Length: 295
Image (cartoon, rainbow, N blue to C red; front, side, top):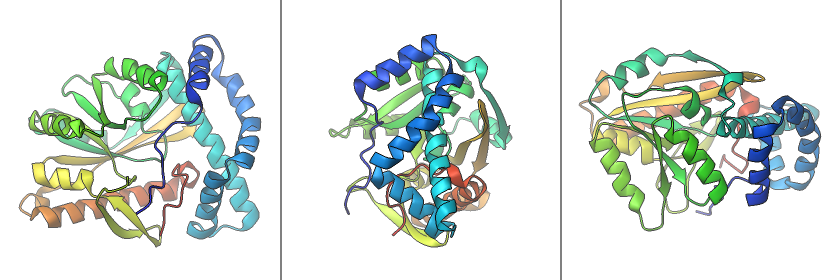
């Protein structure tokens, strides 16, 4: 299987340093206005990502050509805003943002237990903001992260996440992340695992998603079944400028406890895909997988 996604945040070291400097001294509202123009040029030159999103609206949502093009622009603009929002939070501008929650009660209850928790993240909305705005000290949080980001991006993100009891586990060629994952789950901590990205060589399950066949990684669901821990989906969706809503949903249930690991893993996969489908239907413009996702 060919690798469709590189995992790196665009912009390079200089661009990322410039953004961090700007958000320590400038106005995010002003740069939102500049972004409206930048997105046009980005769509012209980043054809692969643009075409993937355009086809997503044309084929998955069955929109007319012009409407698909306008929604592709909206998608790129919202994605740009989500990146700017993350950098703003890197620089400590948390007071400007507001977040509401739906379904957080079940997650708060799980935090008080001795068992570990797995949260499946996704590349729709702005999941990373949960790390800055959902403060808690009951369990250490470990987030699996792609290890190929620039040093500037990784250091800024690490410094700010550490303040909120969150440690990053970079995926490494020496497989050291496997030991970190095992330790986190054995110690009853929280582990965040991407639920919608497949890397070369990783195992996956092919299932129906938004009316077509798509592949999802087995990782988070196999881990939840093997370690018999709680599994949650969590989506952070943009409602307006500086306003987000977080949807938390528990995917495991009492009826899954006695199931075989393989059966439980498949069931948890279907439940995650169903939760993701519901969110993508509600917020179609916030789908940020800029490559050919469906088979």
